[in-house]
Length: 423
Image (cartoon, rainbow, N blue to C red):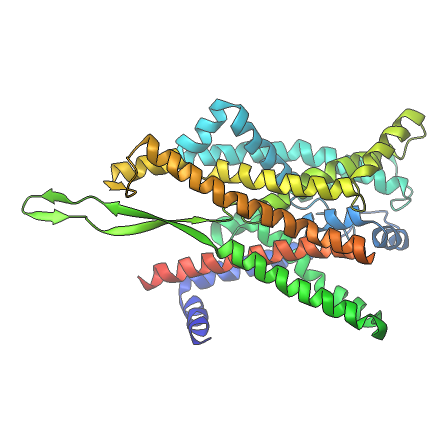
């Protein structure tokens, strides 16, 4: 506790750290203010009725940072930007030139890669915004709209998505932590007062055993996420002794800490983004009277949160995205090359290709454990939903995963900044 208080004191007394923290807080305040400004022509009563019975829009509300709950000008949130990032990272696997930009051109390459993701966000926001507004109009939530009103609303929500993307990148650059994750985190936390008040008003004494079970499972889930996120597999590394002039350098030993879950919360966000598309398409096609389109929309209803198919796909996507994101962000060949250049080697393993293969094998084994655990934790709330019939558990479980992972990442980044100042 004393160490924690000392770090807080150092964060506040250090001018640079204090400015970074205050910038994040100021940005989140702006974000929350924007989320309270609604688009025109909303029927509030219909909106509340619709959102209270729709899990799909509850998931979208997470990505909007809470902006969808009152159809604010930033109702799309960071969803289009996340989808654009997914597409770009998938293309790095299929397009060698993009892979070269991302991995071999350093900071300049990553800057160019990010710019492509930004440009892709605009058409994706337009598609998602048009679909969402059409669904809402079909549900009589947006009323008395002219063609000009529809075009204006579309421009507003696309511009709002770009503003949120820009705000998230500013937070990443001038603040602490990942700006996009912090925006999602802020939206989830902002719902806590309403959730707690609803729980108090609907409290039932006969359900106390069920509440206790939920509380125990919640604590175990949080503990499991923390344990797996913090778990590391150390690989011993030895530096060869080198003689320069009359002095001998090197000869020390250290280790490479490979995290069990290298991808963090990204697989969860990616999986939810992918799974939201079939549901959005199904809801959009359901507004037409054509028999073929209605049949197709019924097929897409298989992807709603109450289906077994959704749970199976959710697990598979989280599992695959854990491996995928680890492969994109962690390059064993580059690590092996850097070790060799610095005169370091893994005891018992030859430098070069054998070292790269050894690191890849270790990473694959520990990522298997992390991917299975993350996938299980992701679908556990759905399993409990099937067992208890409480629909909000699916959304609540996803929120816990995101919140815990973002908090751990933020604490690590603050610790890194504090340690750098101390040295």
